[in-house]
Image 1 (cartoon, helix red, strand yellow):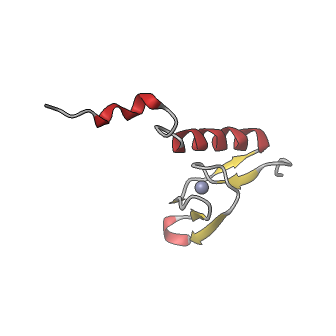
Image 2 (tube, helix red, strand yellow):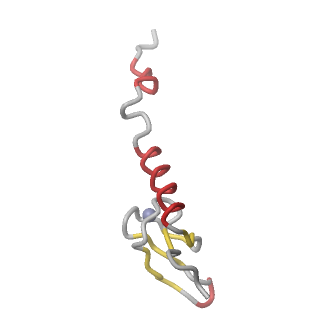
Length: 78
Ligand SMILES: [Zn+2]
């Protein structure tokens, strides 16, 4: 029995666009079409958890972009 609303999702970006690319000896390996993740680990998540994963993914992607604190590497070292 599967719970309604739970689907296999990429653990990195929360996308449902994952495909099984290998099986058998190594077990299943999945590939995410969205972010390029490849691995045996996928999450079975409902909408709420998926949104949480997506939010964290987007936050990590934006890291340093709008945050001026991360841009202090431009100082000359003399
Ligand atoms: Zn992904």
